Length: 117
Image (cartoon, rainbow, N blue to C red):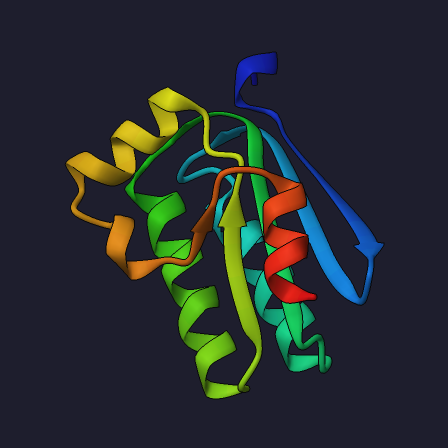
């Protein structure tokens, strides 16, 4: 496994929001871990989740699926779910996939927190 495919996940709580900061690549080798982590947070009662993608280098369709599953789970639980800090290349992948309108996306973590407050 090369270091470029390693994904790190950090959970931070700030102002009543659970921030899940992802870093690295999200692909078929680890997308299920992302799905599990996010859906477990939602099912455990987390009501406001922001996924910070600022340090994500690349994502595949498996990553989009993980984020869509989490979005659906949040909707069913009346939880707020948003993404923030998409790097330009990552945002372009969302655009190419026609997925921008399926997510609440904030330009920065600060903006995401302000929107939750």
